[in-house]
Image (cartoon, rainbow, N blue to C red):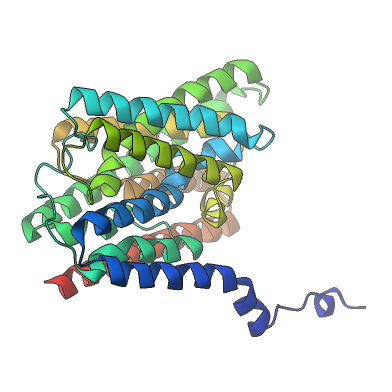
Length: 348
């Protein structure tokens, strides 16, 4: 029997049925959003709850993707307590240091909403759909643009694209240099796994902390700029549970954005990616308090790395494959950016 005859594509009906539970949840969330958006006190917590899951689920590929990919053998609950513990400490520390502001000053130029439009509350639901479709969109633009002025959005765009270019150049130089040194001095592929695992824990901790300081604004934009201690506990407990669910799902469908890249399951590659990404985020954090899309920075990092490794391989086929991967990531992220700007136009 010819092999390809056996590999039949699932029917349209089968594909629709597989999305049945997800579509049911999305429909339910849209109905709830419609009924609660006229009531600000309820709407802000609903928006936070959906944004809390959708933002972390979509952005998990940036911060936790390489860590999850290279630690497949670790139990999910161990990853949960490690990652969730850092989240709890970051939020509590930020609350104490910033007088109740868990956004680390990222919302200073975005006023607290006194009322909500339906599209504003629906934005996190749209993000859930895009995450299901494996699109690494900019949660910053999708969730913050609806609350921001045109001037702030322009500054966010400029800072984001500068971040993409900087991450691309740094990744290209670093991985190009490493690959040439390995080739020139014939460095062995064997390595001390325990030491690299310890380094990876450090790099993941640094990256997760840096990302939280940048992107907690995406989640807390629905909430008051200064929250009470009771509200802090509610926020922390909920987000800790969200991290647990994501670790249980091992990142979910969007994790393929990371696993399709070259050698990301290698602990050394994962560690270097995380360290560079964390340093770039920290640099931009201290430049100014304008929010930026960490998604574009991450995609720039992966693109620079992939192109450097491909050029050094001097093979035409990998070059074509890499070009497709890079362009596909840019298309996905651009689609999310376009959707967020369309939402802003409707709200205006």
